[in-house]
Length: 372
Image (cartoon, rainbow, N blue to C red; front, side, top):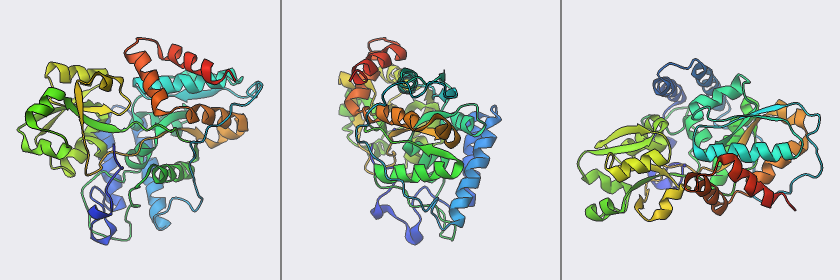
């Protein structure tokens, strides 16, 4: 979760339309279909997400393409932890996470750091992907969760999903061309919905395409676009990627890879196991996966930049932030500011390869970071 979220100026279509964008009404309809198809209509909470996204995107159109006039400048400067026990006597908060290893680690990091400052935190791990966990914010079953900024910009605002459309007054905002711009778009989106996007992590977890080193050598592969010249291929990836532009949709639309057959897997280890066994030839991986250290895999470059900028930032209900006081946000920002590429890759390795629990890995990391 490599490259820019979408396309640079060289790929811009006439009338300000980018590949993968369409007019807002069409985008809302596409997102509705994608969410409901992806969830197989089994989770009524998804309807809440669709309604909220349609409302926010419509608001964007009515304001000339801007979510808010406010400036949202991100910072990854190291933040100090508060002193004392500022969370004592504050209301309890519920922190949710998605359903893969890195999110479990992030949930433990934020929850344990807050608890160390006296805050009461109920941690709800493994709720599901963006399309499933986001409705929890809207229905107040959770107060916050760590999200990837590119997922907010693309999955929740649906900028990149759908076929190119003709120009009109309701054109989607231009896709971001930097991690800072991605954060700003995401923060504006959340602000309009009544949430605050806290400061981002220095690390990004990009989606990317990996193949076995032997497969790449046999077919002289270095870039994603070279997969088009091969026969039918099985593409194994995290299940939600099937309906996301930063996944199966983008691979088909931007690269014309109609030869890929999508095979759904859990994130991380199952995809690498499928590559190793030959069940799939192409795998959806993440830039912070510890398995990439083995040297067994080659990550194909993404010249069309379909994968988003993906810093992590906690999304928090504004009312909760106010009730908890400034030390609450300061604590979360202090954790985020210390999560460099080296730090998160080590944490992931300790859990995935070293078989530590996410709680133990987080505890060890925080012991070194909060001791001063």
